[in-house]
Image (cartoon, rainbow, N blue to C red; front, side, top):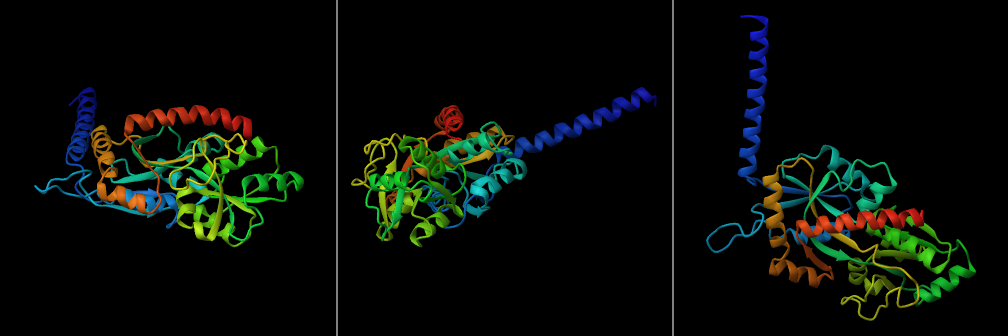
Length: 331
């Protein structure tokens, strides 16, 4: 056998092996899913994202009367990788998670988009693929139940008279809470001190324990614990049905818009087979729309805003552009 023939033979083996592996990949995608699916939550257990992810995925393995899958087709379990306001988990997911559809991640917007703009992260809108959105949770300004403040206006007036004396907690750096904080500082012309907690749960504990004078937290978490805190204002364009008596900051003359509203949904890493993405994009919104799931969301004051893959892609692109501009002004 000539050297040239040997080269072609080896190349043929390499090409054949590659085609075989591609065939296996396609076959696996076509049989997907055939085992339970994980969802990585980049925050601690018990926080709004973790809490809602467990509710939103309840109907993943539900069958119809003919024993056929109604939505995704397999049970979904949650695994937590908290740290650095979500960065630890999302860095792992974008760089190390398997690209086979058996490990999804819960996303939080504006969190991961803002962080990818400000920090050197391994994730961005360019290497993640959304498959559906289940909620939109506004940030709310809160204080402890024994606080001297009974309105956002009172807090702002105190901050004007006492620069840097008002500490405000949030779930981390450049998450929705932090963005609401930065907007409040700029719109009200005040100087505050931001205190990142260990996720939303940690940030809430700082408010309840009196370690900070105020905090921004999720509307859902605040509504569930309303007896232990005072909710002063909502960082959104309109009042929310779960808190009809709580004004927006805009109503109070403080120009804070809805940039900090926390959209939550599920995504896969880029490189996941298109057949898997298509299956999830079709079935995940169906799972979110399950009647019992929606009832559980309402019972727990968890705001629902269901969007399909195309709608989420559009939202991501819009938020990427808006946050790039906003953060250039606020930082």
